[in-house]
Amino acid sequence: MVSTDPATDVDPRKFITEKGAALNYGQLRGLVAKFQNVPGVIGLHGGLPPPDAFPMLSLDIKLRDGSTLVQGQLQYGIHPSGLPSLRDWATRHVADLHGAPRPTTTIIVGGASQGLSALFSMLFDPGDSMVVEELSYPQVSECLAAPDRINLVPIATNDGGMCPLALTKGLEGIRKSGTQPFPKLLYTVPTAQNPTGTNTGLERRKEIYEVCRAYDLLILEDDPYYYLQFPHGSGDVPGLRGLPRAASYLSLDVDGRVLRLDSASKFLAPGLRLAWLTCHPRLAEVAACAVQTQTLGACGVAQAMAAALLSSWGEAGLHDHLSHVQRIYAERAQAMHAAAQRHLEGLARWSLPRAGMFLWMTILGVEDASQLTAALVEAKVVVAPGRIFHARSGLPGTAVPCVRLAFSFETPENIEEAVARLAQALRLHRDQKS
Image (cartoon, rainbow, N blue to C red; front, side, top):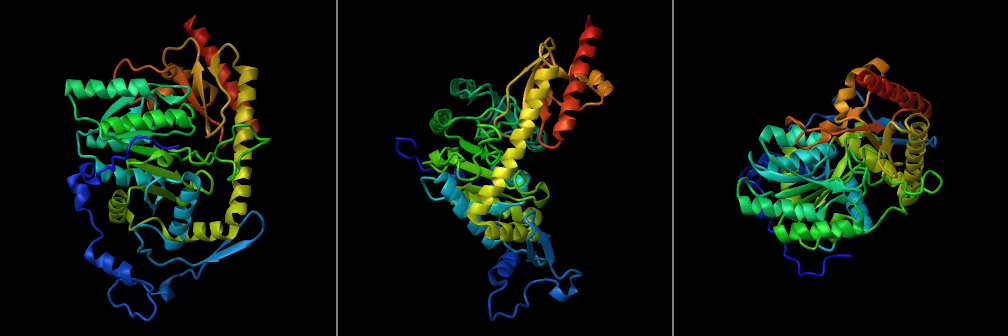
């Protein structure tokens, strides 16, 4: 499953910026963290409010099966790497699913967005470069890369994900031209890619990994939809036990160049703001320092809640829950696909989603889907125009004749009505053009 070439053992120091290398926990916070909750120690060193000053004694969490969890993690959580019980669970969980061939460290972060923010703060200086899929998650390009003037190197994709040949040509062109800093990192969403919904298979991942080895790039594997896979529809969902194992970039990582982000938002609750980052121990250490400068760590209440829930479930309970979630998503994906078949034949082109939350649709006879805005407003339906996902969205002449439709939130009945309204808008736009 892993590369047969000798491991090169990535040197984290060459990727961490001067600012990143200077990040630290701080002497006071380090002292508090070291002795917090140590039996027999009387702590006069930390500015922690007394528990009897809290207006709440504990939180009761009622589960769908009728059972109740009680937890009371209301104190500061001075654990920049994560609440130990949740971090231990995540470490075992990642090892079981992905089996990295070299030592890694897993830390808890306040949602994937905080993980991304921490990594960008330690890996990029203004003017640095990174590789992205041509159509990619705009939070990264607009909110993280743009403010620091990070150069994006967009690489073409196809139904199998990022094209290895296009990646090689792009990197070689930059190396030869010398017109911009050579990229430090490749950012990718390999499962149910946002926005296109494509899945990058194991063989393609191996090819991409080898290109990154050849050109010495880190790989940021942002995989929030990993748990939302339903390749055989609602009748045969994988749950936990049937998810692909040892098939991630982390599973291939003989060098220590992969930083993998997993998220609980899509299968527990977005409001918990919990994710876990797994990577080279030194990179994880610096990332934890970056997180603690932002928020001291992920929310202690949310971490305790998730830890209690996952412990209560065990593997069997998590399997059952994931099966339930996957079944919901599969049914709604099928509902949108069926509605599109009824209303959009001859107007658009699409495929039935097999993972994730979105259906990616090409609108026929339209140069750029943003041209549909007025007609969509008239029809009272909102979709995401494809151009906002393009790495060159701000440049004149960038046109994407596609839209992203989310099937995750609305009921099948609302999905049916929304697709009918979309068809109405497309016909209105077509009639206005003719």
